[in-house]
Image 1 (cartoon, rainbow, N blue to C red):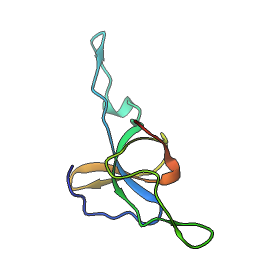
Image 2 (spheres, rainbow, N blue to C red; image 1 turned 135 degrees about the horizontal axis):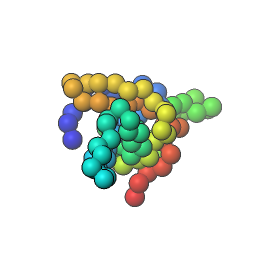
Image 3 (spheres, one colour; image 1 turned 60 degrees about the vertical axis):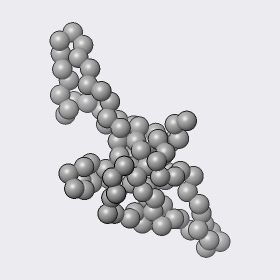
Image 4 (cartoon, helix red, strand yellow; image 1 turned 45 degrees about the vertical axis):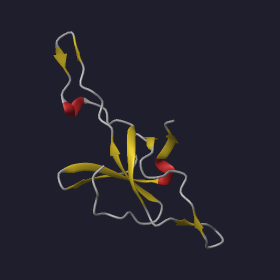
Length: 98
């Protein structure tokens, strides 16, 4: 895993999508623009944390290296040193893939 020079703020999590293998069915190749954004991603970096109602930091439920399912339309895509990443709120993470 490459070292990324970005530290998310608050309850944001930096993830990198896990690209699905390109499949050809019946000789037709689907262009990238027509493919859905993959929902599986790998956690790259965690933010500084979210504060609870009592003012204390709430621990993240995910950790760096976890494979997660994220909301299809959540997050903001960013490009860092030629690689695509997405910044999502922890609430946009639907679950951890065991």
